[in-house]
Amino acid sequence: MTSLKISLAAAVSFSIMNGAAVARDQVQIAGSSTVLPYASIVAEAFGDNTDFPTPVVESGGSSAGLKRFCQGVGVEHTDIANASRKIRDKEVQACAANGVTDIMEIRIGYDGIVFASQIDGPAYTTFTQSDIFNALAPKVMVDGELVDNPYTKWSDFNSDLPDAEILAFIPGTKHGTREVFEEKIVAVGCEATGAMEAMISGGMSEDEAENACLEVRTDGRSIDIDGDYTETLASIDANANGIGVFGLAFYENNTDRLKVATMAGVSPSTETIASGDYPVSRPLYFYVKKAHIGVVPGLKEYIQFFISDELAGPDGPLANYGLVSDPELADTQAAVSGEATIN
Image 1: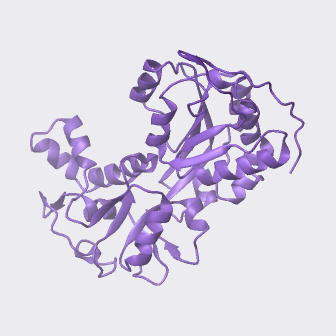
Image 2: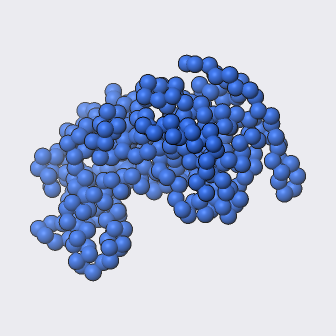
């Protein structure tokens, strides 16, 4: 890896209401469990290849990380929030209410969401968005009518799927992955099966139908996982019939324990995500408090290090771990150099 010559920034204390906060010399990061492995690789390399201390990287989920990020400005608050989705308007407003007003958005690349199961379990090898909707929605179309979901086995609605009990471990609502799961799998399946049209014909407004489409059954066949992917993996290990939702990179590092299914006939890979052929991919981000640049030593240098061609480019170590390089990486580098903000 190319060594970077970076001068140590001066440590400056923030001013707080009751006096001066104690300065710290480590960048502090929290958030998405999907971004966690990439951030951990970069943090370790940053500590090894610069004069700055290794940043502290914590997980907890995109929503939890952004909540911490928005709690305020000062060395007692995190500098960076990792996220597997874009920050929401209400989160920007929550940040502003606490004085976090200049937020930098850094897109680091792309990742895919995959459905995987025990390597020796039922032959879950191919799914469509409609299959996932029919398995997990509380109401589905049967003989042209929208009814309470009667299905208990995958083969009940698709004879090509295994004669196995439906059991899915999906990301909890605080995870950025849940939003992508809903938008690119459940909502697509709802529309493809005719359920959304039936909801509107039954008297729902379009907005009401869109929200209803995203609901999942509560009879124990769809289980929210609030922890990270290791918790989902443990649930799969303990349930031979289970399927789980993972990031592509996590799956690729556990192929000795998991097998992956195609989605809509396309196998997930860095190539199919980069080409746009795989239908369940999403951009990954981290968010930075501009007010902390020049105060927390190494913060801007860490950002620039992360999105350098050497790390985030198509031939860098992050690509080797499963991150799909952003074709507009140069634009992101320019935005960081100019410290561009979203607000």
